[in-house]
Length: 113
Length: 113
Image 1 (cartoon, helix red, strand yellow):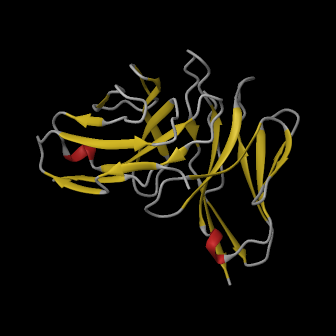
Image 2: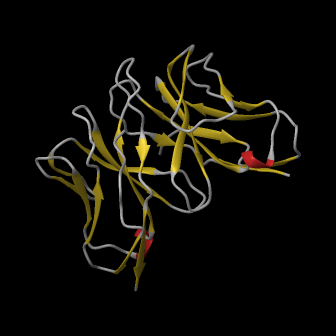
């Protein structure tokens, strides 16, 4: 199983760029890497997903090195509303295969004024 | 915004009662999931479904059961609730094109007294 490891918490200030790294040494060939954001008392919300190299959307970038044993979520110019728990998810379900979905422990990002 | 609903949002119930947590989605997604999350802890997959009449157990053993008779509906049942079942239960869905931007519902906070 592709277990993931993330920092438990990170602090930042408004306007800064934040990079959160997730380690997944046992990632399988068919696994994708997905990041979610979760606010208290809410379900997680999809941020970004990638397989290799770099992916960018309107809210974040995801950097994945060639060996795919880690990934880095980059949030540009964070604001107070970005204070949340960020989860790294590796794996998936393919046809009949049960490649189980593994959420990381999550990183609590605290953005201060 | 994703159209996935969970009811009830909060439930306090006595030991030994049978309960059903409802989850419905209007996106026509084939895949649906149930996660369990204790406060401040990571999400654990307890059940998932590829489609109608298809259900599988996740990586966390659970005494709950699920059914998938209709595409849009994925209820979770506990035949006899116990205090150890106290947790937040999150339902999610994704479409057939893996992987998986999962859309999460708001969750059901269950307390068994």
